[in-house]
Image 1 (cartoon, rainbow, N blue to C red):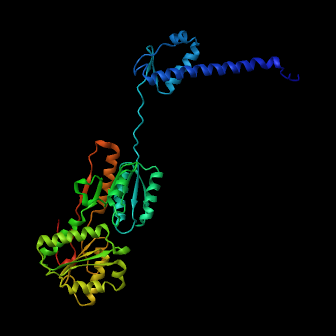
Image 2 (cartoon, rainbow, N blue to C red):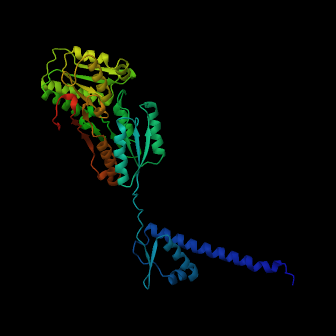
Image 3 (cartoon, rainbow, N blue to C red):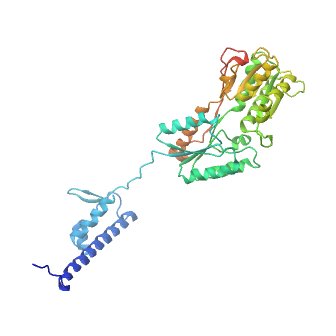
Length: 393
């Protein structure tokens, strides 16, 4: 038989059914919303028994089916719990689970020489705690530094480990204040406001480079040297001092003063830029050191000390018999022609501790004490100083 085309009188019942269903849906949702607002407002406290479905049906004039759907909606949202034979009760608020996987932003000047071990320490500690790392570098370009920090913040990091530019600024204290005002916790790495003393409220993990240089001079003094020089590498830009060099110079000066070494008014501390060191293979620096009458020297850093060894050899000066050397850094000191005794900052440990401090700050908040940590480098004794006994500062 041919199918009948439904007429208007046949379509009406279906349309009415749809409208009725929509009205019922609207009614149960309205009731659910009203009950939810009452719960959130405290009309019914946690653990309070709610009116029964029958009571609400009578009070609202809604069907039991509509009331039951409203309760089911509240149960699904975690606002109500049902207890068999007892009724429906206001549920305890569900706490958002604490994040177990933080994302930590790390800002480094570069990833060469000094920082690979630091970065390894950070990565290993974060990984062991279920956290991850987002890295950015600014290549010692202050104009790129803020962009790098913004990149990390835009990536949604929970905290920052920063190695920022502080030397050469007109107001480093203001710069630090800006960094501390960032919207996430900040731990400074190898940077702090030394001049402020107890006024420094930054959270930081640093090497005690002054202590390391001091210990190097003391080591050479114990070996019998009384004329101890210092050779450093200045930054190329305006021959400015980097933070490590400035601390090494201060530590050297403190040791010389403490020991009462009399240089008869002659300077025994000399500095040149990296290109100047390399241009004549440290020839000029060797001449300055030799002219000062030094029998020993602390050299910042390993490459410069190795270059100085070569210059000394060309002039028939033996290391360590005629000139004892200690380098500062210990990146490649063991690879020199005469393996170099070196001041060795705890780079890997620095990274571990910076990561640990930041994670503690994130998990404990204001209850966490302020960490200001300084790790004193150790001296690794090799052939260049003429001592075979391992020195422990």
